Image 1 (cartoon, rainbow, N blue to C red):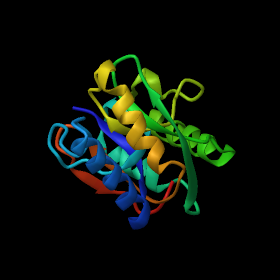
Image 2: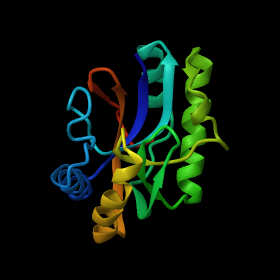
Image 3: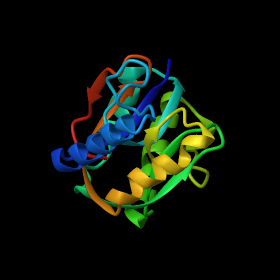
Image 4: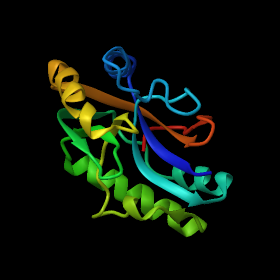
Length: 174
């Protein structure tokens, strides 16, 4: 079981991503809407922790300075070789700095960071379809490019248990 440090979107942006998930499902492509426990929320993950003390991680993140709402601009579709496809945000200096600050805050707690979330290696993404088959890529692209660009705003943060979808809200945006 892992826990992720996630940016969550404002209501308008979350609704837009959920509508895209529904479009994918209607086109026959399983999305985050129906993946695993079905409690997924549109998010951007700063860090995935494989081993951690939840209280210590929460305290370390709460000690970070509060950040202003973060504008995110999505205008590209990406995929990882393990078949996950996603929306790619433009990487602003603020986004990169905040991700690095999160990692710097959680590592002293003894948390074990997944290797793909090391600053400089991290690829920011908002997952659309976690188990994409190559043959479905044209259908995904057709749905995605009908709605891009998507301007979103991250307004809050949470620790999310990946096995259950349980959210532990953080006191402020990080």
